[in-house]
Image (cartoon, rainbow, N blue to C red; front, side, top):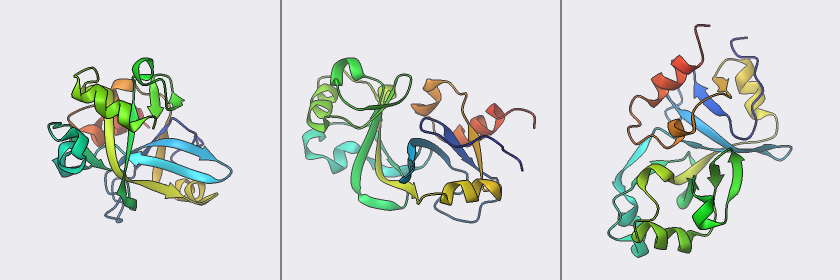
Length: 173
C-alpha cells in the first residue's frame, strides 16, 4: 500500500496521478469531517468560472473565487475560513482552519474588507463518502493522505500548482 495513514478530520486527500474520475482528477481535498457517519471534504484546487459576487447578491462587488467543492449538492454554498476571531463561529477542523459559521456576518466582514481572500475559501458542493468507503478507496491507492502541511496551502490563491505541491509534500516515497 502506498499510503498507510488513516484519514481524519483536517487532513488532505491527494488523488493518485492517473485517477479516471473527472470529478477528482488531480484533486487536493481538505477533509472537514470524518467520523462514524461518513466523510465530508472540499476540493481545494478546482475553480469555477466566475466569483462569489456573481452568486451571492449580498456580495455583488466581491471578486473572491468560487471553487467546486465536489459533486454533491453543487447548488449549495459552503466555506472554510481562518478568522474565528472575527466570525466567532465555525467548527475547528485543524489549527486555524474552520468549517462554516455565520454566513451573513462573513458576507458583511468581507464587504467591509476585514476578511481577505487568503482567509476564506468558498465552495459550490462538497465531496462525500459513506462509512468505510474512503478507507476502501485509500486501500486501492486512489488517494494519499497527508497530515502535515502548512495552513497557507489550504488558502492558496493560485490553485493551479496545488496538486503538485501537495504531492511533493508527501515526501520521496
